[in-house]
Length: 265
Image (tube, rainbow, N blue to C red; front, side, top):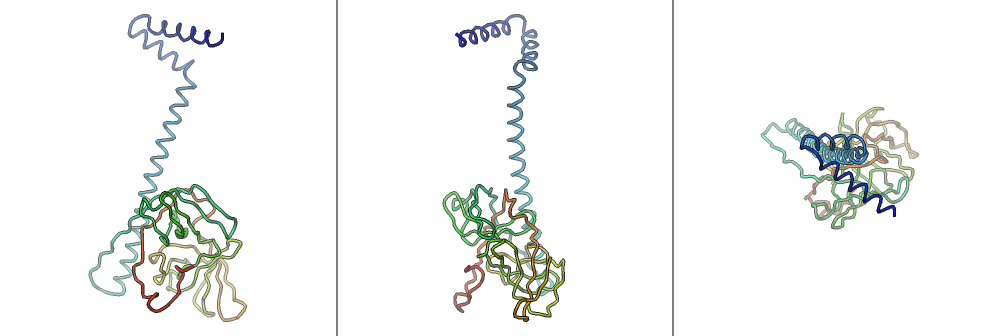
C-alpha cells in the first residue's frame, strides 16, 4: 500500500513538473532542488567535492615528492662540487606514491602495509620517505602491495651521519620504538639539536635525506661510545601517504669483501 502512495506522489510531481511553459518548468525544478531534493543534491555535491579534494591531495603529494627528491639531488651535486671542481649532473630518482592501508604489530615491532607493489616497480630494500623525512624500507613485495619496515622497528638499521660534520653512526631502535644514533666514539663533536641525515655510506638510502635531530646524549655502559637519542622529523604513527623511491644501489663490493651492512638486517 505504501509503495502505491509513493508511486502516486511521484506521478503527481512528474505531471506538475511537465505542465506549463519551459520557463515555468525551470522555476519549479529550481524550487524542488532547494526544498524537497536539497538533502540529496547536497549529498551528491559533498561526495563530488571530497573526490576532487582527494585527487588534488594526491597531485600535491606527487609535486611534493618531486620537490623533495630534486632538493636532495641538488644537495648531493653541491657536495660533489665542493669535493671536485668538475662538471657533473645528478640524475633523478623515479618514485611511487603509496597509501598506508594496514599495519601489523605494536611499538618497536610494527610493520605497515602499502597499496602499491611489484606492478609499479617496487622491490625489496627500496627506501621510503614521508613529507618531512625518512620512514623506512620495503622488506616484502607482492603484485599490488608491499610491506614497510619503519625506522622505529627494532630490526631496522641504517647508516646515518650528522649534517654539520659528517660524523658517522648507526641508526637503531629499541623495543619501545625510541630511535638512537649509536656507534659514536666518546669525545666526538656532537651536540643537542644537531641534524641527522642519511649517510653517504648507506646501502639503502641516497645520502643527505633528513632523519631527525639529536635530543638526548649519553655515554654507553662501556664508557667508550656515545648513544644519542634521535627525534624523528616524520611522525611514524600517523602515516597516510608515502613516497617510495625506485632506488637500487648497484654496487656490490660488500659481497665481494664479505662485508655485512645495514641492508642485510
